[in-house]
Length: 171
Image (cartoon, rainbow, N blue to C red; front, side):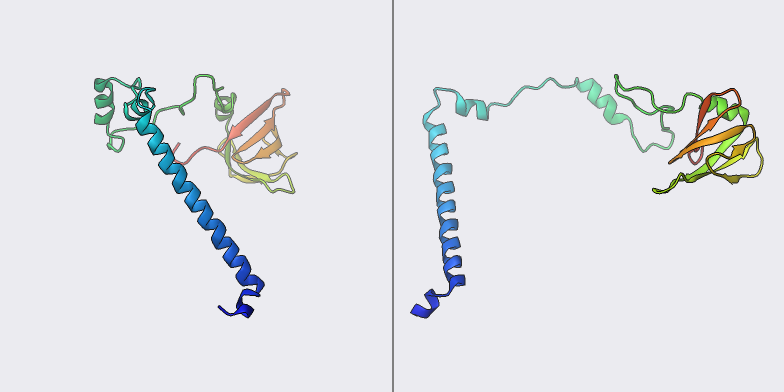
């Protein structure tokens, strides 16, 4: 090669990187070959046997698995459970007063919350026409206190707070 070509810094860096990559590949191959030799010669310790032997895991009984397989999740008569699945220690989420709110007649149609403001809710009181309500305004006897995505909190004349959730489609 020409001497002027070896003097360019970019070529020197490329040659150095290529040499380092070659060293890394050779070290990796050497380490891989050495570990295979160690497994082949050290069969008395049981290391190779432990790697080859299947691990027995407690599983489900065959009849339980077959019962599950026969339940078609896409069958037309299959329906969603009435409540959402919860872990054993998980608290029940959702409003405690939702049934009471439905009895009284407040229906929450939708909410809109902005990052810089309180937002608003669209509600109907006892089957009336829906209207937009902002926090502090009244709907029937109740006062809207807080709006969150999918829910609105109202203060009743008795001083209690009731959270009303937007009904899901088809509910």
